[in-house]
Length: 176
Image (cartoon, rainbow, N blue to C red; front, side, top):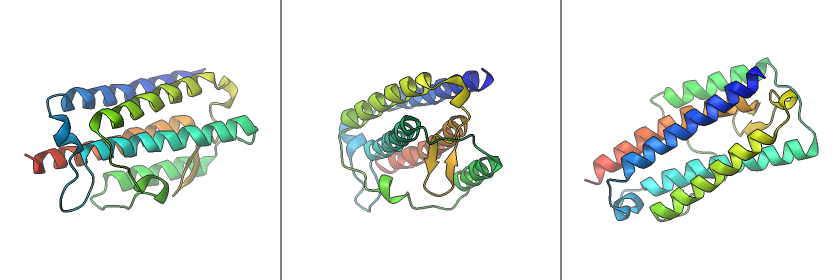
């Protein structure tokens, strides 16, 4: 039951982060949010799409693992893996996004936001449907560090989104 509460709080924190970003971006014209920088890089809409893609991949893996009943409790290596991910995300170094989430389509801000909204709702429903005794299982897989539990997955997503909030701020400053 403690894992369920932690998971619910993690989802709530992630959703508050997303709503805070949406509120901040409301004051910008949609064209500015969809503008791809001339020097390369992503638009704000592409960053949002990238974050949605991560959650889509997470959801797909969860459905595959949980549906196939091939999941096991996470071990100590998952704690170490999460630590490595968080250190990488707060470091000043840039890392290439994994191939399955680096080819980000060019969408309008509204389309990107709708995509993220849809997958977030599906992710919350899927997490809510997992039996309590399976919540500590390896139902999330990061391409670099391997399998993590859902609470660890949310912790990673929060840190990952925080990193991209800085990127969004830089994009917006450069487009003014």
